Image (cartoon, rainbow over all chains, first blue to last red; front, side):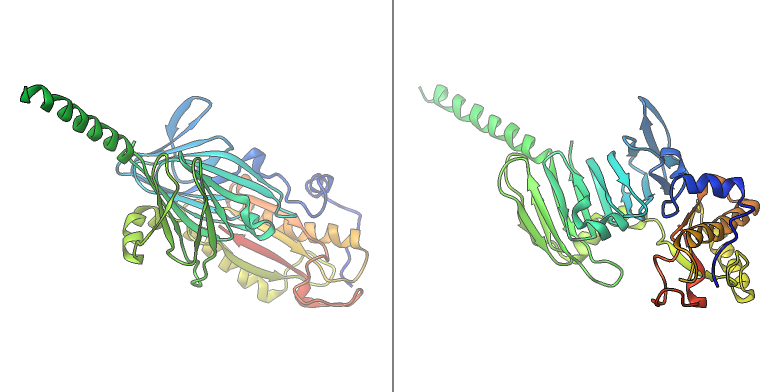
Length: 154
Length: 203
């Protein structure tokens, strides 16, 4: 048998059940991802403030990530999608929505400048084109889970 | 009479240089990359102006310039790897999945899985900014709702152990999937030890 006694549930588990058993609880309070790699000078902009973006920093929708001439950065999102960027780059996390039960959602990144590589995670398992990149000139999406975009010049 | 003729010509070429410089100001490159297994899909590049372009297969590439449609580029694999060298080297390590098994109807790990929990910890320690996603599962014996609770209790137990060992609470997420995602598909009410598990994704 593989059942559980309903008595003696801890308060913690009770809190999780409110959200429904199949849902990841506490989607880290609005965090959509995390800085996993940060080399050289890497900064982020949130609510008009620009601050350093060290390894471990939690990311939110609408954050802007910037790298200097010596900088590169690697981000991982809640659905295991990753985005990494080389020097002199700027990317806006325009939209990130992810349901960890259904894998439905959307990820839109605006690459203003710089070389950026992407690997789509669980979002692409549900809907292949749900991870998209926009640049000053184009929109890029597809079945490809791995792709890269370089915006050079000013 | 000859000199005034030359001036407009000079002005025109100066203008042409300015226009060209403006165009060269922004050049975009789009590339399909293979995954770890060498698989690659198709990518559609839709410009603000002009026709969309479809790129198919590993290292297919295109170049876009302001005011015109993207055109296929013949970049070699080496050229692409060089252009994206820093970005590719900054990719986060791929997540690693561990599967730990439980005693029947319980949130107690079986002894073998205790050792695997140590492997989870070792992987967590290897990473600069680790976070872990724990998903609990059950076999199909018992009621769906009871199994939902048990699955979540298993995941929570592992979550709490990681937090107790020093992982920040907001770096571990726990979820239960009940009997919905068996590792070994069975009929209802079948006891299957391989389905009494948590999957821990160390990222």
